[in-house]
Length: 121
Image 1 (tube, rainbow, N blue to C red):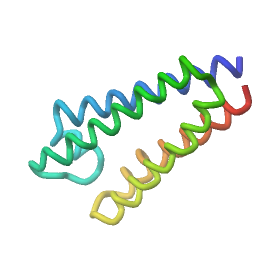
Image 2 (image 1 turned 120 degrees about the horizontal axis):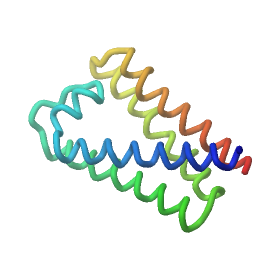
Image 3 (image 1 turned 90 degrees about the horizontal axis):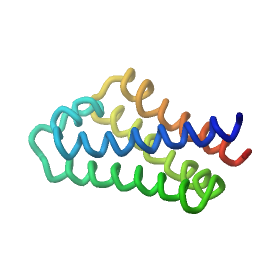
């Protein structure tokens, strides 16, 4: 049961990050607004974010499939730094606390919980 939960959550989180990356590539202005800090029309930085997120999601899926739970756990632990940083970016740039904590900080917590679950299997 624990293994199914840990792997299932890891797959879901990685697919979510791939989806977010794709959203920044295909509808960048709307994705930036959803991120919590509207970015206007600066598509270069939005494309960079899309590529970053998509790559991290695919890397997480590859680690889980080809290396295993231990490697994925370390990956999740380290990658949790990104949404923690995103929380600060949103707060420092006029975004709402609801998005900063309800989206970004909550994502960091989910990643840390998943890391703990993966370390336990």
